[in-house]
Image (cartoon, rainbow, N blue to C red):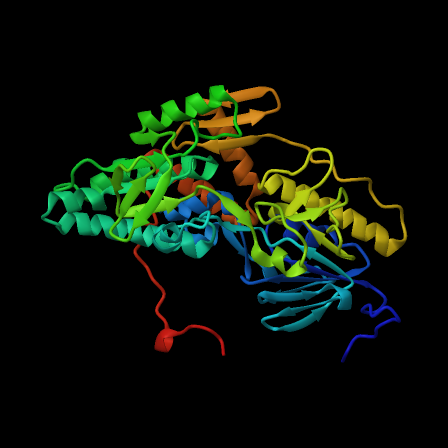
Length: 435
């Protein structure tokens, strides 16, 4: 039976909130509205929440996809005022308070865009076509399959030049993801795969990290940048700074800015992200990164009853824009939840949003990490231990935390990656889409 609607079109008198995106910001917002007199619809093209900081560990055969992803319906189970819909956002009709999606139209009283970010190849078609991104679960699985298959090819290739190409992994972009990814690939190849392929004609296995800027980890203090570079080099990663990539040929040839080339069968692109193209549906002027301009209450400038949070939001005013990381998205989701709760209950709302920087950190593999918390700087084992604790606590679900901890311990003690599987889903009649 259709729910009763008041004169404002609200379900049973409750404010209808549509949240687009089940990432850190959207999921936090939805859960924080649990006790509010609102009806929340959470829309996402996937039926799971992905813990993206550990995505590279799926790509490097340490974790299984189910250990960093959790079904959204399971997360929202028991939250009576929330429902989940799996679909893609196609159009926003702000004047009519409705959106078009791949599963039909959805009406709302308040719309919150929290669709995150996508890979940014800066308009380079060769990178778009041939490099491996690392933003989605499917990206990590495709990359894992490719790397393991490349080593199988290396073991059976008689041509030394071809074998060297199969054994080389190039990571482009030395931000936190690139640094963590290159460190993990180096440990996978040196500590695990070399033992798997003992007796095979493998040469020197190379992991290269290429960065256009003169330093890696640009958001970290110089002392931590230097510590990270030393650690990567000690782990066998060849770090090339001030080395822009011009082109990637389909054969696996990276053409650098100075004309030099790097032969690598595996090229991972972590050189940048941009806001989800969902922001383009609002018809407002976006910033250079595709982010939606919002005021200090996270309201989209020039569009009524629409908010944007997380990687999609370019906050105007003091402290903005904020980094495209999980902590700002979570805090913005909490802030908008307080605003909507106040609006639904007729209470005074919170003041302008203020981001509280609780620090940033990155791991560079076994026993080594860096952490920057205010004026405090940590590196080496302490930084690594801090990274482990923080990320373990943030994973959703006790089962996932336990299994991740077991896999980390297994790898640490036995130098073994448990998910070295080349597994691809089979499709019926070439298509696995629901008609």
